[in-house]
Length: 474
Image 1 (tube, rainbow, N blue to C red):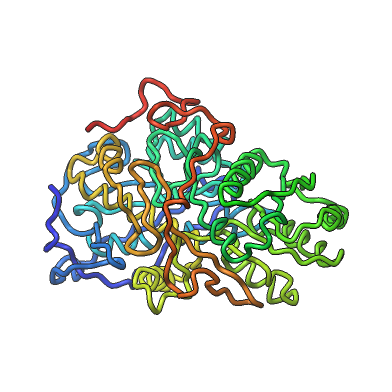
Image 2: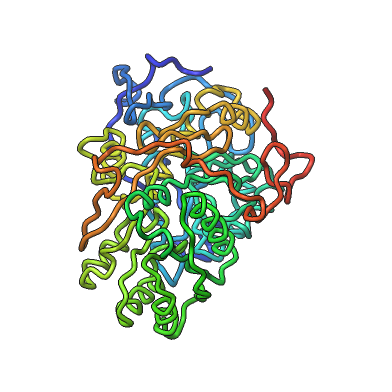
C-alpha cells in the first residue's frame, strides 16, 4: 500500500555514490549501479517529517508496497535505467551531469525509504553517442523503466524501446519519433508539433532592429536538420525574416571554418542560431567568425548554458560574449533565491556530482517518475505508470522550471534568456533574475512539414507502433 505523508522519513545525504567505471562499449552489459546500500537502522527509526524538493512534497518514503508486479519490480526493489553520452570520445564527459543527477536523486529517495518502501536500484548506461541502441537492448531485458536519461542518437534506439514496451521518462529527446514516442513522458516536453518559442519572441524584444539579420546554421546531422527546419518556423512566428546564406557545416567537423565564416560575412548576418551543443567544432567555428572580422549574436539551445561555454569563453578573450541561450529552467546562479535550485545544487554537490542545466532536467524527470510511482503503490506496473503520468498536467519540478504539461506532452509558455560575459552567465531577459516572462504566443504550433514523423490523432508517432504498446487507461 502507498505510505501516508506522515510516514515520510528524514534522511541525511551522507551515503557515498557508488559508480563503477566501465568503458563506453560495455557500459550496458556491465553497468554501474546506484543506491545499492541497505537502509541504515537509524534511518528506519527516524522521526517522520515532511521532506520537500523546492515546493514539491517528496514522493519518496517508507511504506509496505509489495509484490513482483512487473519486470524489475520486487517486494523490495525497483530497477530503473538511466544514462547519458559521457563516453563519447570526441567530447568526453558529454552530458555527464545527467547521470550524476539521477544517481544522487536515487540516493536522496532511498535515504527517505525509497518509493513506498521499495528501494530504487539504478543501472547506468553510457550511450557514448553511437551506442544508444546497444544500451537500449540491454535495458529492455532488465529494467522496469528508463528515467532521467538522454541519448543524442535516440533515433537509433527508439524502435527497440517501443518493441519491448520500455516506458520512459527521459530528461530529453532528440529525434521526432522519440519526442512524440509512445509510453514517453518528460518533465520538460519537447514535442514535434508544438514548441516553446520564448527565446525568439524575447530576442525580438531585445533586438527589434535585427529581425531581418539572423540566419540558422545548417548541419549534415539528420536530427539537427529536423531541428533547424523547426526553428525556422518558430523564428518566423516571432517576426523574424531569416536569411538563407547557404551554409551547411559537417557535423563531424571541417578542416577549416574560415570559408564558411566568410560566406556569413558576405551575407551580412548579425545573428546566428545553432542547434548544436558547445563542442570543440562549434568553438572552432566561433574562432573563424572572429578571424574574418564579424561578431554576430550567437543564439543556441539551453545546452550552451554550462561550464563548457563558460570555460572556453573565459580562456579565449570573450569571443562568446555575444552568446544568448533561451531557457525554461531557472539559472543555477539563482540558487540563493529559488529553493528548488538550491536543493538540486546541494543534493548533487553532496555526492560530488556535476551541476548543470541538463542535470536539472534529469532531476525534474526523476521527480516526475517518482511522483507517479508513489501513486501506484503496490500496483507498480508499467500500465499504472503510463496511466498516472498521463494525468499530470501541471509540473514545474518543485520550481526548477516553468510550468509544463507532461501528461499531454506540451511545453511551457514561459522562458528567459541568458547571456555570458567572460566566464560568467547572467539573466538578460526578463530583467529580474529568477523570473520568467510568460505569453500564450510563446507556444507555437509547428507546421506538419517540420515534424519529421507522422502523428496519430493522439499526437503519438505512428512509426514504431504495435498492438502491444501500453496506452493510458482512463
